Length: 187
Ligand code: AMP
Image (cartoon, rainbow, N blue to C red):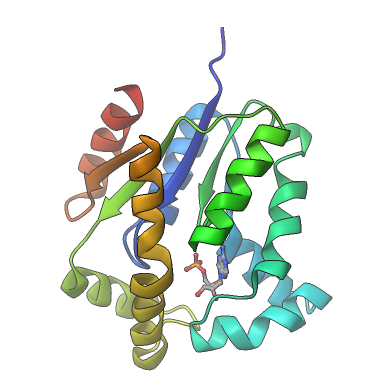
Protein backbone atom coordinates (compact mmCIF):
# COMPACT_ATOMS: atom_id res chain seq x y z
CA UNK A 1 0.00 0.00 0.00
CA UNK A 2 1.27 3.46 -0.85
CA UNK A 3 1.20 5.68 2.19
CA UNK A 4 0.36 9.34 1.63
CA UNK A 5 3.06 11.71 2.80
CA UNK A 6 2.33 15.39 3.30
CA UNK A 7 5.17 17.47 4.64
CA UNK A 8 5.77 21.12 5.38
CA UNK A 9 9.32 22.44 5.40
CA UNK A 10 10.11 25.31 7.75
CA UNK A 11 13.40 27.07 8.37
CA UNK A 12 15.23 30.24 7.37
CA UNK A 13 16.43 31.04 3.85
CA UNK A 14 19.55 28.98 3.18
CA UNK A 15 18.61 26.22 5.64
CA UNK A 16 18.53 23.64 2.83
CA UNK A 17 14.75 23.30 2.54
CA UNK A 18 14.79 23.20 -1.26
CA UNK A 19 17.57 20.62 -1.49
CA UNK A 20 16.08 18.32 1.13
CA UNK A 21 12.50 18.73 -0.10
CA UNK A 22 13.64 17.73 -3.59
CA UNK A 23 15.40 14.58 -2.33
CA UNK A 24 12.43 13.47 -0.23
CA UNK A 25 9.93 14.29 -2.98
CA UNK A 26 11.86 12.10 -5.42
CA UNK A 27 12.19 9.22 -2.99
CA UNK A 28 8.46 9.27 -2.22
CA UNK A 29 7.34 10.02 -5.80
CA UNK A 30 5.37 13.10 -4.77
CA UNK A 31 5.59 16.71 -5.96
CA UNK A 32 7.93 19.25 -4.38
CA UNK A 33 5.91 22.45 -4.27
CA UNK A 34 8.12 25.50 -3.79
CA UNK A 35 6.29 28.83 -3.79
CA UNK A 36 9.63 30.59 -4.37
CA UNK A 37 10.21 28.46 -7.52
CA UNK A 38 6.67 29.13 -8.74
CA UNK A 39 7.20 32.87 -8.27
CA UNK A 40 10.63 32.84 -9.97
CA UNK A 41 9.14 31.00 -12.96
CA UNK A 42 6.25 33.49 -13.12
CA UNK A 43 8.75 36.38 -13.04
CA UNK A 44 10.90 34.80 -15.77
CA UNK A 45 7.80 34.24 -17.93
CA UNK A 46 6.56 37.77 -17.24
CA UNK A 47 3.08 36.55 -16.29
CA UNK A 48 0.68 38.79 -14.40
CA UNK A 49 1.58 37.00 -11.16
CA UNK A 50 5.27 37.50 -11.96
CA UNK A 51 4.83 41.20 -12.59
CA UNK A 52 2.92 41.64 -9.33
CA UNK A 53 5.44 39.60 -7.32
CA UNK A 54 8.74 40.86 -8.74
CA UNK A 55 9.26 43.97 -6.59
CA UNK A 56 8.59 42.04 -3.36
CA UNK A 57 10.88 39.15 -4.30
CA UNK A 58 13.69 41.51 -5.37
CA UNK A 59 13.48 43.37 -2.05
CA UNK A 60 13.37 40.18 0.03
CA UNK A 61 9.83 40.95 1.26
CA UNK A 62 7.00 38.45 1.34
CA UNK A 63 4.60 38.84 -1.56
CA UNK A 64 1.04 39.60 -0.40
CA UNK A 65 -1.01 36.59 0.74
CA UNK A 66 -3.58 37.42 -1.96
CA UNK A 67 -1.03 36.35 -4.61
CA UNK A 68 -0.18 33.06 -2.92
CA UNK A 69 -3.28 31.54 -1.36
CA UNK A 70 -5.27 30.76 -4.52
CA UNK A 71 -2.13 29.40 -6.10
CA UNK A 72 -1.70 26.90 -3.23
CA UNK A 73 -5.40 25.99 -3.28
CA UNK A 74 -5.15 25.14 -6.98
CA UNK A 75 -1.81 23.37 -6.72
CA UNK A 76 -2.95 21.01 -3.94
CA UNK A 77 -5.93 19.98 -6.05
CA UNK A 78 -3.84 18.90 -9.04
CA UNK A 79 -3.93 15.14 -9.80
CA UNK A 80 -0.21 14.67 -9.01
CA UNK A 81 -0.73 16.02 -5.47
CA UNK A 82 -3.41 13.55 -4.42
CA UNK A 83 -0.97 10.97 -3.01
CA UNK A 84 1.03 13.56 -1.13
CA UNK A 85 3.21 16.63 -1.45
CA UNK A 86 6.07 18.53 0.11
CA UNK A 87 5.57 22.23 0.70
CA UNK A 88 8.73 24.35 0.66
CA UNK A 89 8.42 28.08 1.39
CA UNK A 90 4.75 27.92 2.38
CA UNK A 91 3.34 28.76 4.90
CA UNK A 92 5.54 31.82 5.44
CA UNK A 93 3.45 33.60 8.09
CA UNK A 94 0.80 32.65 10.62
CA UNK A 95 -2.12 33.72 8.43
CA UNK A 96 -0.89 31.42 5.63
CA UNK A 97 -0.60 28.59 8.18
CA UNK A 98 -4.17 29.16 9.37
CA UNK A 99 -5.34 29.26 5.74
CA UNK A 100 -3.56 25.97 5.06
CA UNK A 101 -5.28 24.29 8.03
CA UNK A 102 -8.68 25.35 6.70
CA UNK A 103 -7.80 24.34 3.15
CA UNK A 104 -6.59 20.88 4.20
CA UNK A 105 -9.77 20.28 6.21
CA UNK A 106 -11.78 21.31 3.13
CA UNK A 107 -9.78 18.92 0.90
CA UNK A 108 -9.86 16.12 3.52
CA UNK A 109 -6.08 16.06 3.51
CA UNK A 110 -3.83 15.89 6.55
CA UNK A 111 -0.27 17.06 6.96
CA UNK A 112 1.97 14.41 8.58
CA UNK A 113 4.59 16.71 10.01
CA UNK A 114 6.10 20.20 9.84
CA UNK A 115 9.88 19.78 9.58
CA UNK A 116 11.92 22.66 10.94
CA UNK A 117 15.50 22.83 9.70
CA UNK A 118 17.70 24.59 12.25
CA UNK A 119 20.85 26.30 10.98
CA UNK A 120 22.87 29.14 12.62
CA UNK A 121 22.94 32.55 10.91
CA UNK A 122 26.67 32.36 10.10
CA UNK A 123 26.11 29.19 8.03
CA UNK A 124 23.00 30.64 6.35
CA UNK A 125 24.78 33.78 5.17
CA UNK A 126 27.73 31.76 3.87
CA UNK A 127 25.41 29.42 1.94
CA UNK A 128 23.22 32.20 0.53
CA UNK A 129 26.20 34.23 -0.67
CA UNK A 130 27.61 31.23 -2.51
CA UNK A 131 24.26 30.37 -4.18
CA UNK A 132 24.22 33.32 -6.57
CA UNK A 133 20.47 33.73 -7.04
CA UNK A 134 19.34 37.22 -8.01
CA UNK A 135 17.83 37.81 -4.54
CA UNK A 136 20.98 36.50 -2.82
CA UNK A 137 22.89 39.79 -2.53
CA UNK A 138 24.04 41.12 0.89
CA UNK A 139 21.21 43.60 1.36
CA UNK A 140 18.38 41.32 0.28
CA UNK A 141 19.77 38.47 2.37
CA UNK A 142 19.74 40.71 5.45
CA UNK A 143 16.13 41.68 4.75
CA UNK A 144 15.05 38.08 4.12
CA UNK A 145 16.53 36.97 7.43
CA UNK A 146 14.70 39.83 9.20
CA UNK A 147 11.43 38.95 7.48
CA UNK A 148 12.00 35.33 8.48
CA UNK A 149 12.45 36.26 12.16
CA UNK A 150 9.50 38.64 12.23
CA UNK A 151 6.94 36.79 10.14
CA UNK A 152 7.98 33.20 9.51
CA UNK A 153 9.55 32.08 12.81
CA UNK A 154 6.13 32.38 14.58
CA UNK A 155 4.90 29.62 12.25
CA UNK A 156 7.21 27.24 14.17
CA UNK A 157 5.20 27.91 17.37
CA UNK A 158 1.98 27.47 15.44
CA UNK A 159 2.92 23.88 14.48
CA UNK A 160 4.53 23.21 17.87
CA UNK A 161 1.20 24.02 19.57
CA UNK A 162 -0.57 21.84 17.05
CA UNK A 163 1.75 18.96 18.00
CA UNK A 164 3.06 18.44 14.47
CA UNK A 165 6.52 20.01 14.67
CA UNK A 166 9.81 18.12 14.35
CA UNK A 167 13.04 20.12 14.47
CA UNK A 168 16.16 18.77 12.79
CA UNK A 169 19.72 20.10 12.90
CA UNK A 170 20.43 21.28 9.34
CA UNK A 171 24.02 22.35 10.01
CA UNK A 172 25.78 19.21 8.79
CA UNK A 173 26.38 17.20 5.63
CA UNK A 174 23.34 17.06 3.32
CA UNK A 175 23.15 13.24 3.53
CA UNK A 176 23.19 13.40 7.34
CA UNK A 177 20.34 15.91 7.24
CA UNK A 178 18.37 13.66 4.86
CA UNK A 179 18.81 10.69 7.21
CA UNK A 180 17.68 12.74 10.22
CA UNK A 181 14.65 14.00 8.30
CA UNK A 182 13.67 10.45 7.32
CA UNK A 183 13.88 9.44 11.00
CA UNK A 184 11.75 12.44 11.99
CA UNK A 185 9.11 11.54 9.38
CA UNK A 186 9.02 7.91 10.51
CA UNK A 187 8.73 8.79 14.22
P1 AMP B 1 12.25 31.12 -1.46
O1 AMP B 1 12.66 30.51 -2.76
O2 AMP B 1 11.32 30.25 -0.66
O3 AMP B 1 13.41 31.64 -0.65
O4 AMP B 1 11.36 32.40 -1.83
C1 AMP B 1 11.91 33.49 -2.56
C2 AMP B 1 11.02 34.72 -2.40
O5 AMP B 1 9.70 34.43 -2.89
C3 AMP B 1 10.79 35.17 -0.96
O6 AMP B 1 11.84 36.01 -0.50
C4 AMP B 1 9.46 35.91 -1.08
O7 AMP B 1 9.65 37.17 -1.70
C5 AMP B 1 8.71 35.06 -2.08
N1 AMP B 1 7.89 33.99 -1.45
C6 AMP B 1 8.09 32.65 -1.55
N2 AMP B 1 7.15 31.98 -0.88
C7 AMP B 1 6.32 32.91 -0.33
C8 AMP B 1 5.15 32.84 0.48
N3 AMP B 1 4.65 31.66 0.90
N4 AMP B 1 4.56 34.01 0.84
C9 AMP B 1 5.06 35.19 0.44
N5 AMP B 1 6.15 35.32 -0.31
C10 AMP B 1 6.79 34.20 -0.71
